[in-house]
Image (cartoon, rainbow, N blue to C red; front, side, top):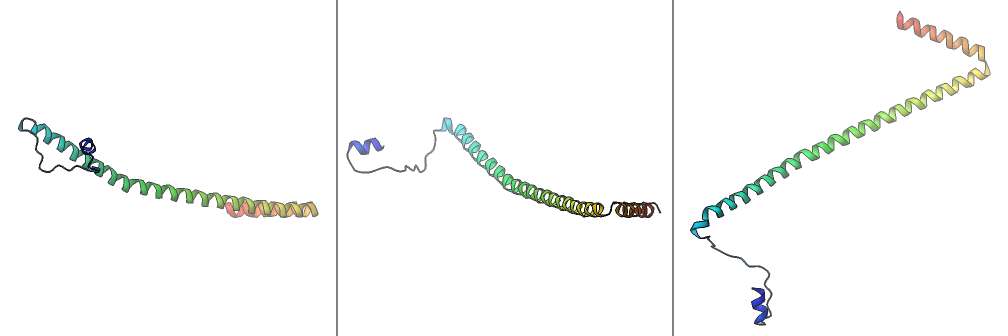
Length: 120
């Protein structure tokens, strides 16, 4: 159609052609209807899939984010515990260097008290 307009030098540009009340010939009408129904079913299935995607994917992302935050919190807790244990050990070692015998006795008596309270 654009070719005809160009040949007549009308200076027009055809952007869209809209056909109204176009009916296929009776012999192909059943096939035409099947194609129409298939296209509608395709669109319906695409919409259903998109709806399911929009429901499932954000939920999965949220669960993943929650698990990541939980793991990060656990890691921070473990690091803080390890740092605390290291600080206690350093303090104990410092005391041990100052007075080895006293520190040994103190540790031994503390370990006995802990052992008895756990079994007692």
